[in-house]
Amino acid sequence: MNKKELSNIFPYKLNKKDKEFYFKKKINMLTDFHKKNCKEYNKILLATESKKLKKNLSDYIFLPAKIFKNFDLKSVPKNKIVKTLVSSGTTGNLPSKIYLDKENANNQIQVLNKIMSTLLGKCRLPMMIIDQDPKTEDRSVFNAKSAAIYGFSIFGKDHTYILNKSNEINYELLNNFVKKYNTKKFLIFGFTNMIYETLIKKLSKNFAKYNFKNGILLHGGGWKKLESKKISNVTFKKKLFDKLAIENVHNYYGLVEQTGSIFVESKKCGYFHTSIFSDILIRDEKFNLVKNGKRGLIQLLSLLPTSYPGHNILTEDIGEIVGEDNCKCGLNGKYFLVYGRAKNTELRGCSDV
Image 1: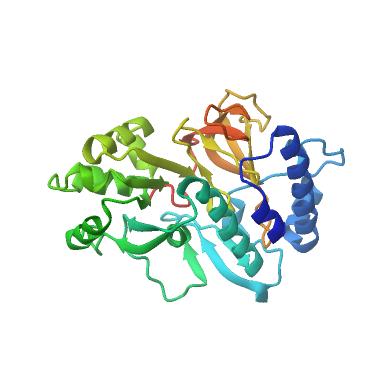
Image 2: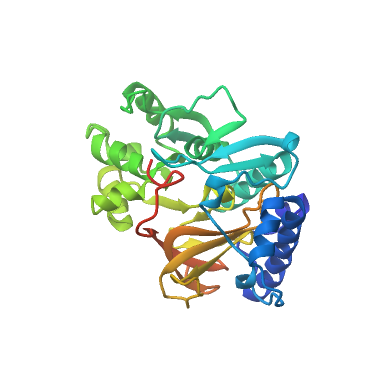
């Protein structure tokens, strides 16, 4: 993928026929590249790949997401690595490590920018972040949480982190921000559970609804804790509206293994959408493809991973493809739902922050 392709194509423009032709060509090129440049990936292909002609995306070998916990997979020389993304992990579990060279890191930023500009426009918005400032001295290593905060921060200005070291609201900072920006459009970013605990549960009722009604709220991850509290996506949005009058709420879905090619929930339809840089397949417990409307394991494909073989990954999440190219919101591409983690799989990434 080159800069011209990244800058000239609208993320949701291609129809099914055109995208399949374009996407398959790119995935084939990525597979060959990683096969030649990552010896571990080459061994996997030699051991598992059939010789039949690959007519469909589903014919290409996928890697389980867990493999990045156990192997250091790189397709570029070690001295070219400029950044390492590390999944949050949990006690007793190894984190995934994703190695980025300069080209891969830049492509992630460009694609994330293109996808988010369809939602936020091209102007940077005043940004309230429902978290602590993830200050780090080593900018070459990021955990999944810090990577998400820094990644989305490029869409904002006057970044205001409203939580202190004890994860309590700093009302002085919050007051200054809403006093300055509540009459114009601004961006609110945070992880789902942190949004729930802070804005819905803890925020003082002294904050009138007009303080937040012009906000655009972007959130992701953290659903594991809310599911245990029987808080659905619909309930989450209703509580935000009832307390703060926020209508513009967007959930996003993505993996640290494929940072940049995220899936954003459309306000008009409530579904996640694939862009021209990503695709999704659903498989059953025997790894057979299932039809649209059936639940199964989510397989994600991305055109961004060039410094590591993360272009075709089977996740541990359960989802369902609802349709393609015919969503009422008007965006082309597949649109889908995510139901959470499959049973008996370990937590990973920022899914439980």
